[in-house]
Image 1: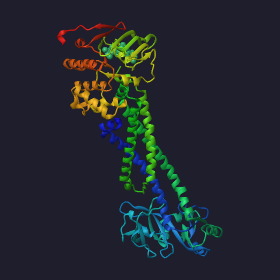
Image 2 (image 1 turned 180 degrees about the vertical axis):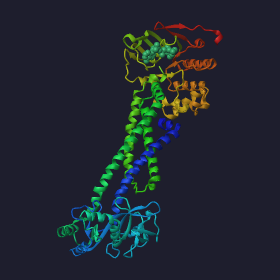
Image 3 (image 1 turned 90 degrees about the horizontal axis):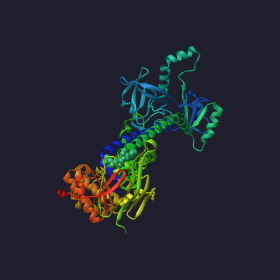
Image 4 (image 1 turned 45 degrees about the horizontal axis):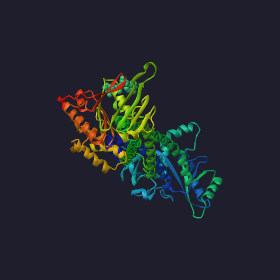
Length: 381
Length: 237
Ligand SMILES: Nc1ncnc2c1ncn2[C@@H]1O[C@H](COP(=O)(O)OP(=O)(O)OP(=O)(O)O)[C@@H](O)[C@H]1O
Ligand SMILES: [Mg+2]
């Protein structure tokens, strides 16, 4: 049997391909949207993963330090370190700062840690040049994406910092690039940056904004100890909130990612709906264009099944071609996005199924048109 | 086995209802034998196309009876739910315009129906090539309709109508778009087909020059069909 769909498509191949590519771009954007979400999930866990602490001790009744602000005394680290089961404990700070760079400062998240401490928050696998911090002052490790090079000088709060190490793909849960400075520098920057705020706070009677505060104490455990038991112990004795690494990741996923996923999910759903409507419209007009031929075929006695097969095959072909070009399109452009986009194969297959279902639904419109076509209309009377 | 290929009894067709009702055919009775080439003539709007479409099981009559070959297909209603199968199996259609499928080439246009009817591609194409030879356009077998002249397209349309070896051909002004010379050759071809393949052909025409080539004339008069002999005009042959 002659394959009518193949003949029709090859007869107007250029038009068909351009149409498929157009729909494909829409599908490509759907893939990118899903990829942006996947990227956020990956990004959100980089910092927690790199620090790789067993426990996070933060200000009481907060979900800090990422989902909520948290302030604890630096010396808390000493009293944590003597708790049964704790191997090492260190103080850590997080603050958003601007790195001066030409006319466009780079917004980053600065991680402050003790260069001589026992927990190193820099993942050695991501350190592509130089070393971690080796001195207590004026050294900085930056993320490659900030654009700074080794031994560049960066002025922060009137001091000159030297770039001693470069990491790659290090970002905060909010997607800001990471830089690492010493705890002492971090406290100084925080203090100087907020001078006016400190004054303001003092006038209002708020004190305690001193430089010995940090955002969290992180701890690792000796082997053989149960994380939850140690966490409970700290909660009881120190009146702080304590989270395991897993809990900290869950907080991030819940608080930061969940809202983003709703946002992106809705966006994706609308895009898929728009793509479906567009596919349906294309099939509808493609069928309308062939109404004369369809009537003639019905008149001379061609069964509906053959005509319907043509419509359905063309729709599916359109869907498949659009899907393929959507994948090509998304792979061509995803690296150009400033934030991480992760394209995963299962997501593509999910979209494939959705596209096929959308195509089949769309083809119903064409099929309905075929069934209702009047053969007598073929000869215009 | 009767010699009759088409038989129509007391056929009535009206459009619309009440004040807007139009009676087009009102009690037509006639028959056409196998091998006969019939000219159907009447003024414009008299109902020639309508009559043809009723015989062709495309448009439903208001009442009456129709036989195609030995099968009664209409008795105040269609006797088969699937009139399209009757069309596919028994009837070849030719129109004023060729109505070829633009995205199929000549041979695919001709073999589409036989293949839909269950023939293999090979046998359908073999017969299609014979038809094209017969109609003298075998060299255009793989051309698209848009690359052919009006006369060539019309011959392809005739080949399509013949491809399924129908016993009835209904042709609605098949020569209207052709010059006299081409028209004569098309009608002569139809006559040849009628005789050689025992096919009954009804051909609507406005061209009196075609009449001498036909066996008989059916005329719609006062909403009825009357048969008359052909006045053989020797100057035409
Ligand atoms: N679907 C319809 N609804 C209403 N009236 C119709 C319809 N089809 C045809 N008619 C009417 O039936 C009459 C016969 O039409 P038909 O097309 O059969 O004429 P015809 O003899 O083929 O004319 P022509 O030589 O111009 O082709 C006309 O008056 C036309 O207006
Ligand atoms: Mg007509």
